[in-house]
Length: 168
Image (tube, rainbow, N blue to C red; front, side, top):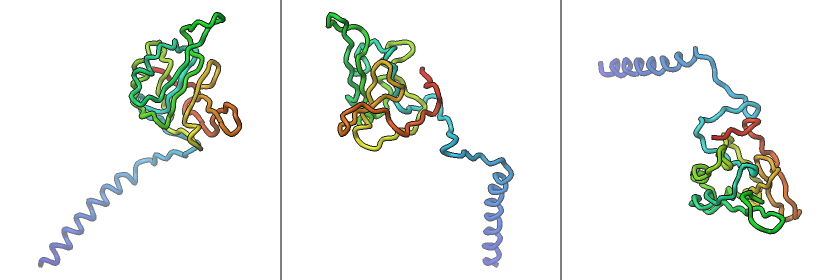
């Protein structure tokens, strides 16, 4: 009699599992043809840091707020050599960055000069590419310094998720 109880319990357990299987079998498939299609993450996702040199006022608040010490900038100067409230260059070391978003929160400009994008794929082929720099006129993704070729280069293989980066 114990044998038949075990067979009955096992049969009920199989039916419960098949119920879950059949429930999802009848629903339409949700398949993303990666990498041609990509899912958008949630709005508050902390993706790659982007920078807009035209908006930045070089107040250094993002540098002071950064616990990882991964941000550096230099103020632009006028013809007389005096510092002005524009940035000459801005650098973020993604090898040190912990994506805490404190730099974005400290930025006083509207729209933000530094912000997290929704991009979740950063492409680095070496350590030098992790240090991204921006000057006025550079793309949103930034440039990196190639010490072998002794020149600034745009990162290759970096495809933004959205054509125009969204700011908060």
